[in-house]
Amino acid sequence: MVDNWIEVGKREHAERDKEIAALFDQHYDGLCDLAFMIMGDRHFAEEIVMEALMKVFTGWGRIRDKARSDVYLKRAVVNLCRSKIRRKMIEARSNAVVYRREERKAPDWDPEVHETSRQVWEAVKLLPPRQRATIVLHYVHALPESEISEILDCSVGTVRSQLSRARGKLAHMLDPSVQGATG
Picture (tube, rainbow, N blue to C red):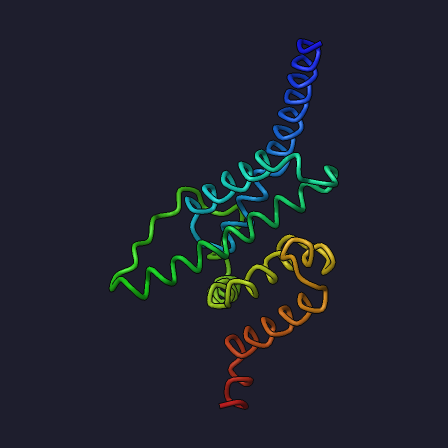
């Protein structure tokens, strides 16, 4: 009888491993891009995605809806990015010099192609982490507000508020007439 339970356990683990491997294969590149756009560093992005995948692997039994495990994975990536940014800010305050690593791989899109794209990207990088994540998820990944709210673990109203604030800040940073009118 014990041998039967061991075999059942082995089959369940093998099935779980297949599902997680498929999830990894399907979402790895997109998750790396998401983390890169939030973090601005390809090395940290890959590290965060691997950490998020480990969280999914170790918490697989706690995921209620396996069909939506990609949302759990995106949420883990965004939260890990936000945590990493907070740690970097604390380190920056305590250290006089902040060490930045070179990016291993350029993004799939090149913000240097057009000056406007470069300016917008520079402005987005200045947004607070949550607003930056909201902008990237909405405009780059073209996710609806409802899915962004699941990923960021907040209400749809909070997503709308974050998008509105981010748009306002970007308009202020990018449009000289807005700057002149407010300052």
